[in-house]
Structures are given as structure tokens and as C-alpha cells.
View 1 (cartoon, helix red, strand yellow):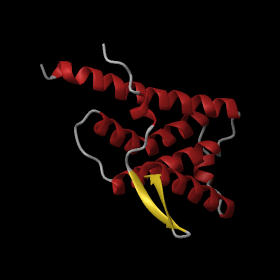
View 2: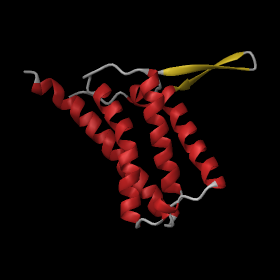
View 3: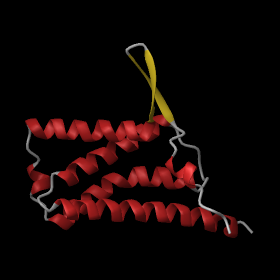
Length: 142
């Protein structure tokens, strides 16, 4: 039985380098996209309303957020399963959509506990599928 490699789970091996104040700062490409997407939507909603999103019921709001999250999940899963190599440009782009999804979820009119529960459920589900696929992949190629 294979032991879970926590270092590979927690490490960010794909980064972009930003030069700030004469120093190079390495930032995970997908995390950078998430920060940019989240910040952009929060800044935009400070100036403009999003009545179309607010007009939806909570289950539809969550569904819409999951649709925005799907490209990042697909990107991560296909790389985790070894089907393809990713690029930082794709990671930043899908991370941006993921950040927009999290920002929209943060704007919903439900309790913080329910928002956290949705994020944890979706996040753990994607990670579980990723590691399950990694485990099953050798069996499928026998």
C-alpha cells in the first residue's frame, strides 16, 4: 500500500516569479490567479451590483460557482492523473475563474458556516477524486 506523500500535496511546484522591490518572489501560479480573480470581483462589486447572481436562489448560486471552478478542477485532475502537462498560463487562467467563484460564493446571503461547508465539501471531493484516480490509474493500465 502506498503512503500519502504530504509534501507533494502541500507543495507548490509551479510558480511564477514576481520582482518586487528588487527581490524575486515565487508565487504559485494557480494561487496567483485565485488572488487576482477574487480581488478583481470584490473590487468590481464595490463599484457595481451583480443583480443577476443575487437574483438566483442559493442552490443555483452554488451551481454557478462550481461551473466557474470546473476548469481549475479539470486542469488539476488531468495533471494529477498524469494525462497531460500543465502550463502556468493555464494555471493562472483557471485560478482566476476559481477566485471569481470563491468571491461570488462569499457574496451569497447565507451563513459563513454554510459557505465554509460548501468550500470544504467541494474541495475535499476534488482532492478525493484526484487521489482516487491516481490510485486506480496503474490498475487500468495492466
